[in-house]
Image (tube, rainbow, N blue to C red; front, side, top):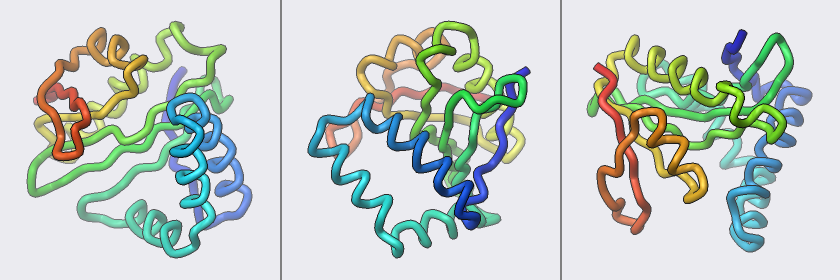
Amino acid sequence: MIKLIRFDLQKKDEWDDFYDWFSTYLSEVCGEEEYQEEIDDLHNDELNARMIGQSLQEHNPYFIMRILENEACVGLITYSYNEERNRGFINNFYVCRERRSSGVGSAVCRIVENHLRSLGAKYIETNPAEKAERFYVRNGFKFSRISSDGERIFGKAIE
């Protein structure tokens, strides 16, 4: 059974666990320079306080979730909801190598889509790493646009 549980980043042991999972994710999707910049950001107390604050917001929340399979953590996902635009956005998504191609990622997508739909989202977007694009296409996402930063954005209606 797959479920998502929020990281409580106000607790040191939860923060440490998140840091371990997130740094592993970054090591797979970032080049060395970008990886170091992201790790430096994880040590920035002001940025961390802002991220924690966003995760506690009632409006336009940011979800920082651990992925549990049969009560064992197998990854993380972060996503957000924009009420004004009725849109969700998957920011970061990581499943450990041992559980890839097992259906865990697709199950997590369905859980996130259902959660965002329950909040009022009509559409969900993501900016996947190039090697993850096929996964998103298999899960119903389509290339939709180029962002202002030149990133490829994939989207899916979830009405």
